[in-house]
Length: 64
Image (cartoon, rainbow, N blue to C red):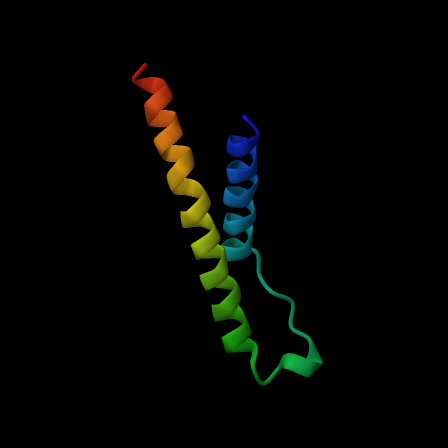
């Protein structure tokens, strides 16, 4: 159960990183596109890494 909870929290955190807009600060105005791409890519990677085991566990429990 703890493993599923951790994966679910990672899934939600990855989704939030992909969706929430990043505030624009004056000190990273020049690299804003790279920062946004980095946040989106990290969010997608976390979403996939945590989402696949959740989907597998759901199918495994559904088929019992």
